Length: 367
Image (cartoon, rainbow, N blue to C red; front, side, top):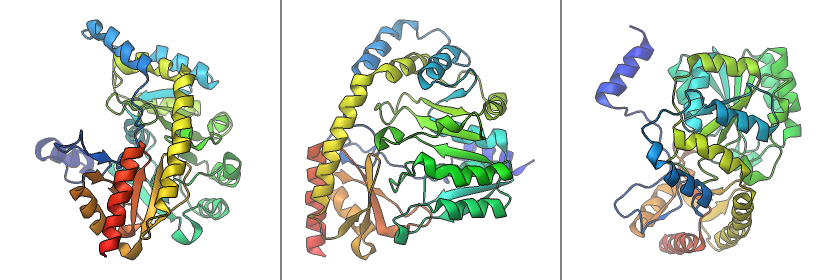
């Protein structure tokens, strides 16, 4: 029996002790807790989506479309891409694992530090995973020329980059990807770009490259639209990549509510403007407030969260102190290349920010 199937049986019967850590507080006091650990829009889901789901309750006994073709067609029209350029998933994470299973590259290069599900997915399906580390000295920004050189001199079939990156918030402009795309083309490699947080960056997507390059772009609808429980994500890519993924995709992974909600979300410009206006002011407020905390040094971010260096590598101690005050943040010790000297905080409503800042000042005053 292969290692993969042994691993699968272990998970089914005994549980998975190796599941990656993520943000999101699930304690008994979650309603009163100030949860800054999960990067979810605090404005709540669009009103139209909530009303849609309520109206669909009577049809819950019916199967959704097996491949979500209607939603995909609507999505491709909204994105301006051709037929067969998209694939839907039960959240973006499903598509990470589906891509790894369908492509099965021998060698993968991941731009680190970043979301830890990429490494887990590729290793689960037998890939050799290497890291291209972005350092604190360079504000965690990837040197795209050095990355391209590494790709050209190696045998990497897939390069993974999160843009804006989680947890650093660093955004790389689309024009700066040219050296990497050229390097990958020489080795017939694929660029896997996770753009789950690109709505917050106001930057240009790499979607314009899918016709002429082997590119797969991952998008999540759950964080920007505050629908993490609904589970809906999508991928956009070169048709050859999408076709490979479809061969390995299980039927009915996206439920009827998510399929109907997707076109509605794509068309809701009012909600998008409201969200971006909120983040503009609340992020500025959080950054200004952080400047008054002597023990925290924020990293420039183009997303809805901020990475902060903790003075004296006291992230664990700060985390424990905050929990006693009902405040929850994301520690970063499980992100490759960061260690225990950083925390990540999501931009939330002002009362949550105030509770976090007050408790953090209290902690460092005691140190």
